[in-house]
Image (cartoon, rainbow over all chains, first blue to last red; front, side, top):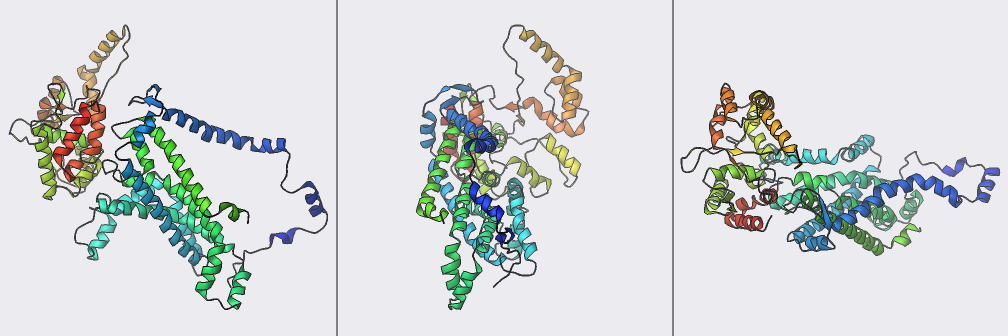
Length: 322
Length: 221
């Protein structure tokens, strides 16, 4: 079994006697309501200021009418919602959103599982590889996207250059301008930037699996595949849950990748709900802040429903009460 | 030939003006006029024949300029700041020529407009008038234009800049400058619709694309 060296028993430091008794009597993790409130005030203020208040303003904006220069022109009732829901390009945008989220999250999870499995093993240069894995996470999304725009370029992009030199293709592919490749090209970038976080969630999950369970399985004669399938995988469920839910939210809300890689394409052919929302307010002929706000509300509702359904499906309560 | 969402209305304007078309004729929208359909069909033909960069319907202006700057495109519909960049880089040899017109008439150039706005208040009119007189006085406007690398809009300005050989081609076409209908408030929306949809006329049907734009312009954008 692998020994990582950083496995220490934290309980070894507590000495039996006085301290433990005192802690038990005061009740670990319990404070009175006023004290709790005092500590929570900054956080509550922050949440009210940057989450609740803007949410209320967004809802108000979604029920208002604005001129194309953004001037408030009065209440609009639910008009903005009907206009968005009957928008001719909405079906395409919804389809793009589903493809984008499902493809990026699924591919990310599968690749991350494999890579995390490799990165928990001890090998020369592991430290370097782990650092290298973090880099896409640390770089700004716009910079990463812009780099991929250059890589994908059909005139001077590296990808086409390599493919041409290897005689895989005879003419350059317009990865971002050709409808057949645009979404796939964006998904690659989406996966690339989602990998680091997901890999580290899985590394943490793998490290949390007790060695003795593995040893017991080995003694019982379980094959490597059986050990992975019947021990590692079930014990990774909490990590899997976190990775899936958080990635779904991040990927759904991802703006820079799609906006940067898709900026040459007219119309809404490759937009997801997030860039659709932006374009409604600033780029489309509607140029309507109200419709954009309504889309924002719809987006929040969609992601909430999706996450709740997912948590329901995987028995969230059972998992977290473990 | 950049017809991507960044500035496709500008690119198309230059082609359609030089084919005798216009966005509006006698006060009504003429986006889908025969001349304009002919223009866009011609552009589609150029693209289909492979005479343009790949994917003209999905190229933004800045990217098209980069192609020319790096020597990948042999011809580009540019403007004076691009020439400034090219002189600075010094990587490609180039010459400036006026846009050819289909019927052999004098070349029409595309003028970009910006607004100077003032509030409608009593007494303001005199102030605005005084400002304009100062702004367009020879010394003021010519210095401003020279520093910014723009082109003159006054007759005296055109004379003043004759001294600069590099600007000669631009100056000769200036009297024939044509503008987009920026004085129509609907244009702001029509422009956005054109930017987002014109490329569809290169990949799809030019007439259908222009018909749709015409309909949305008539409906008030």
